[in-house]
Image 1 (cartoon, helix red, strand yellow):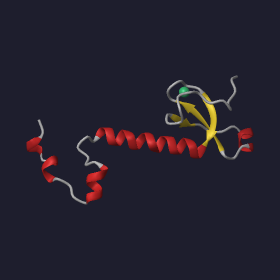
Image 2 (cartoon, helix red, strand yellow):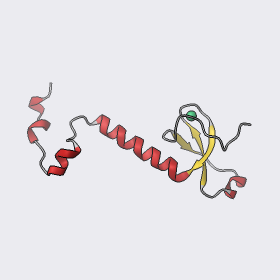
Image 3 (spheres, protein in one colour):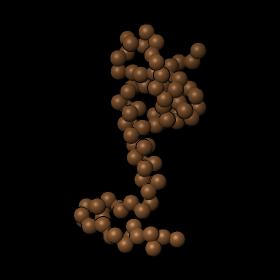
Image 4 (cartoon, helix red, strand yellow):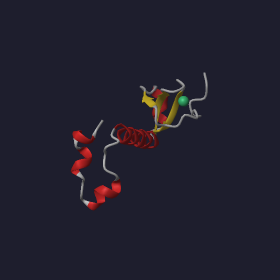
Length: 90
Ligand SMILES: [Zn+2]
């Protein structure tokens, strides 16, 4: 059995939460995860994993919506309706 305290190199963004064993409750800040990329099981800080997953989801949401106005446009409080018009899409 490999060392659960060493994490893989894929980052925390693809972790799937698993049920902890009883002894793992000795480490209240750690949760048991399995990496969806390489399949490795590891103990990781819950906050770090949640942060990484939230960041990944935000990035994916941005990539899925290329028509989304840029943060600068949103700050201006002014969205060009013409950009979202179907007539301009091909
Ligand atoms: Zn991994």
